[in-house]
Image 1 (tube, rainbow over the protein chains, first blue to last red):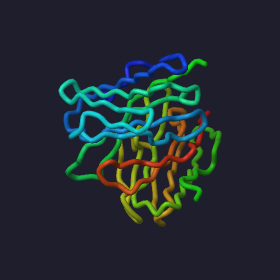
Image 2 (cartoon, rainbow over the protein chains, first blue to last red):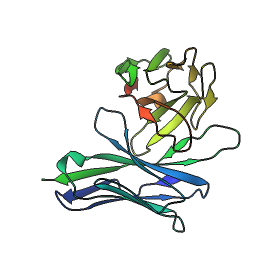
Image 3 (cartoon, each protein chain N blue to C red):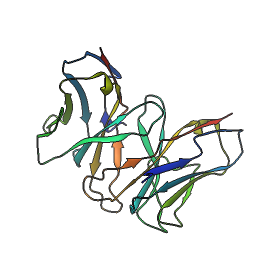
Length: 115
Length: 113
């Protein structure tokens, strides 16, 4: 049972427009959410995160929105650039009683920004 | 700083063979992790370590063993490889803590025939 879901395997956007990547989760114990970006033949790199006590976090062109009641988060990229073409993973973290915090990843969305 | 490095980058094994994947980090992180990535499934945690000399099971630990003899190194072993272990393996490290931002290595592509 996937606790973190990215239902869109791919997304194409024109350069300069907004990219919106979506992520849904089922575990109400998740209290921290992260987005990672991955280029081919490289490891994922951290992009932006948000705590469950917030509903928005911005970092330059990247903004993450969290809707706790809907168990939904989204990553907005404005304006989109060709260099943003990559796979984007959503990840979530929960406090655990008997073990360390772990990240649960979604399956990823391939973003293609067209020039 | 090299960050997180993984050795080897590629490997082909026959069913039943064994191998060890090496992960090294130079960021003095306490926590280290091994993941596997399969098509359409994201990254799944195999094993992790919260400090030198410690290891713990993740989501998909069967068929793998790990060791953390030194703080900077985390080894992943396959004792008897199976075709189902064909995957891309990523190592990561972190300080731990609330946000648990993890830093990833470049990955090892393993094929088991």
